Image (cartoon, rainbow, N blue to C red):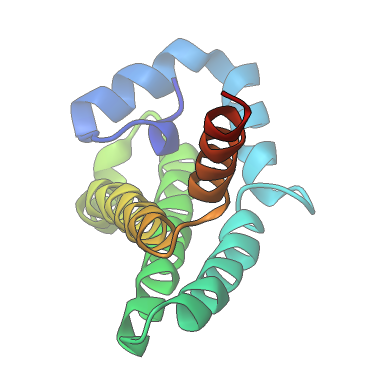
Length: 145
């Protein structure tokens, strides 16, 4: 029932999900974000790593900004969810989190999906490891016949 794991959410679904968690679940949810290797640290790891991979992979260098944008959206989403956890059950006290959070969630997932789709298409076009493995397996079976 985590907001950041869904594709879309709004004030009513956020209120419902946070209520279902109960007080101890909300404490654990908050701890997941702020622990040293928690969800706030994750975009700081994956975004630069994916950006570096995109930088090396694509001749169009601006595509390397896509995972950085996804990481920035992830951080905005995390901040929004933390704010909602702080104001629960009075979510109306966090209008910015309610306005930004759902869009940040969408931006995170859209940016990551597009990044991985572009990387997969690039690997396929270049005859990536999976492609080479299949062609080698095919040539070895045809030679033995």
